[in-house]
Image (cartoon, rainbow, N blue to C red):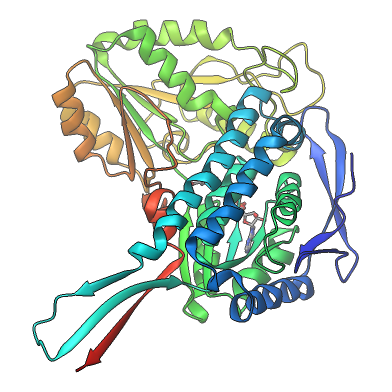
Length: 483
Ligand code: NAD
C-alpha cells in the first residue's frame, strides 16, 4: 500500500504540522491497512486559508460555468479510469463487497459528470429579471457561489459521499476543505490526486484527514468557512450546527434514519422479500436510508417471514474482494460491537430473533456477523426506534392502512420510507402521507443523482443532489437600478 501520510493543501502534499498519524484498519482481517496523516487545528487553518485565497483571488469562481464543467468532467473521467483500483481500495478500507464498491465509484464519477452539466447551464440561469410593482426600478436576481465550504463526511460510502459535496460545490464556483471519516480516509486522498491531474487550480479543493475532535471540530468552528456541509450521525450533526451558530454559517445536514417499509398483503411476497433484503443488507445495512423498520400486513406476515428467513440464511458472507460475497464485515470494531449490543438489546426487549446475530463459523477474524431478522418487535423498543446501522431488520405486523402510516411516522427520523402494494392508488396516497424526504413505491433504495436527497425531522436540514444540491452552494443576490 502506498503512503497516505500527507494532507492535500493548496495543491501540494504536506506533512501535518504536528506530524501525527492514525491507522486505518482493514475490517476483514483487523490488520492495519495504512497510516494516515492526522490533521490538527493548525493544518485546518492552513487548508481554510488556502481555500479562502483560492476563492478571493484565484480563477475558479471567476471562470464561466462551462469552463468549470471541463475540469469536472476530467475529474469524473479520472475516477472512471481508475475504477477497479479505487473500488479495491474502498473494499479494503470499508469492507463492502467489490461489486457494490464498483457501483459506488461509478456513481461518484457520474455525480461529477452530472454537475458538469448543471455548471454548463449555470451562466444562462444565473440571472433572472424580477417583475416589480414600481416601473421606475429594474431588478435582477442572480446566483453567486457561497464562498468557502467545509465538508465533513462519514465512512459508509467514502468516495460517493465526497462526490455528493465536492461536485456541486465546485460546479457552483466554491472552494472547499473536505474532511473524510477517519475510518475510511483513503479514497478521498486519491480524489485529491485525481483533481490535480484534472488541472483543478490549487486551493480549490483541500483534503484533510484526521479525527473528528482534532480535525472535524476545528473545521466546523473555523471563522473562514462560509458554509458547512455535513453527513453523519445526529449527535455530531447537532455539534456542527452549534459550531455553525456562532458565526452564522450556512449549514446543511444529512443525518441518520430509521426508515419504514410498509408491505400490504396484495404484494408479491418474493418481490417484497427481495426489496426488503436490498433495503437492509446492501452495504451491510450501513446505509442512512436503509429500510430497517418493516411493517407487514397481517395476511402475509408469517409467509413473508418464512421466505425472508430462508433467503437471509443463504447470504454469502466474507471478504468483499472474494467473488460471490454479498455481505462484508462491518466497518470497524466499534461499529461491530455497537451492532452486536443492539442484537442483545433487541432480545431483551422482547423482539423475536428469527435468524442471525452470530459470527459466521468459517470466519474467525474480521468484523463479520450473520444478518439479523427480528420479528414481532415492540413499537416502543429501542431497536424499533433507534438507528442500528448494521444488517439488522426489525419487523412487525399491522392491520390496516391507517395503522401502517401512523406507525411508520412514529419516529424522530424522516429520511426515507417505502411502500409496496399492487394497488398503485393506495401507494400514491400512502407516499404522500409519509413524513420523509424520500419515498419509494414498490422498491427500496434506488438513488438518482438528478433527484433531491435529504430528510425531515432529525434526519437533517436541506437537500443534496440534483439542482437542489447545487443551490446548497449558491447565494442569491438582488441588484436593483433606478432609471
Ligand atoms: P459520525 O457523526 O460519527 O462522523 C461523521 C463525520 O464527522 C466523520 O468525518 C467524523 O470524523 C466527523 N466528526 C466526528 N466528531 C466531530 C466533531 N465533534 N466535529 C466535527 N466533525 C466530527 O457519523 P459516522 O459514524 O461516520 O456515519 C454514520 C452516520 O451517518 C449514521 O447516522 C448515518 O445515518 C449517517 N449518514 C447519513 C447520510 C444521509 O445522506 N442522510 C448518508 C450517510 C450516512
